[in-house]
Image (cartoon, rainbow, N blue to C red):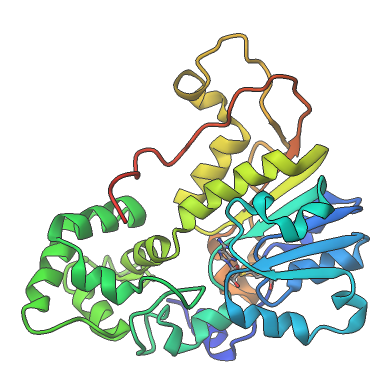
Length: 331
Ligand SMILES: C[S@@+](CC[C@H](N)C(=O)[O-])C[C@H]1O[C@@H](n2cnc3c(N)ncnc32)[C@H](O)[C@@H]1O
């Protein structure tokens, strides 16, 4: 982990990533938007300032409500906040009156303030309980690490972390469990370090991929993403905008194929006559942060922004499920 990121971890302030690029891509901003990942409110505030009529803001973390409550009136009176996951958000009766939407934005992952508090259990560098729950409810990372079988752990690190040393790590965890449960972030990070070769030029912590895998499973992040994308497709008006900021290749692949399933046509869209898809991709290549932004905010380094415009199609086919290969493997 770079020095800059450690400083950011210590500051606890969330700096919105790719915000300027987002505003440029989705302008002019009008009507009702949904911000599914409110966090510290950076994107919601910017949407209001740029002309949105209302922003429906969701966040699964109860801490985000405090951020909303501290907003000046000029923002809070135009933001409708709901402490909720964004998956299948279209089914929430409290917000249905604001549909159809002009835009949906999801700025994925954890915020710097979640990352910074060691008690939340996301940090690789500060010791804390092995928790990783964004919503502060449900199954913890410690429960997965201490209860999964060796093959379940290996699959988790391989599929959700793309970690080559997945099998060795799983075996190491099973051995370590003979001495008692694994309960803290540093205990797990130091254990994983023994099994992941450090190439020297590789600046990231050797346990980064494994921690990401645990976090993705604890919070059902990929499943949430898929459910959120489908919900957006159901409630965006024709011409409406879907903008997603991803931070890892698994998330980015899901968004890429969702917006432009051409490459997956044979698998998911077997009907040759299907020429149009629910979204039109705004940029064929994802938008990435500038060197200047990465320098200012190292957390931005792996971010990618993809934007789609909702097409109006009669009798469109069902959208593809992109997570089928993971299904049935995990709780
Ligand atoms: C990267 S931060 C967003 C920061 C925000 N855009 C800003 O400018 O302050 C991600 C936030 O989304 C929340 N989150 C992540 N996945 C979520 C989901 N599936 N449903 C609801 N909230 C989610 C996290 O709790 C976190 O607060």
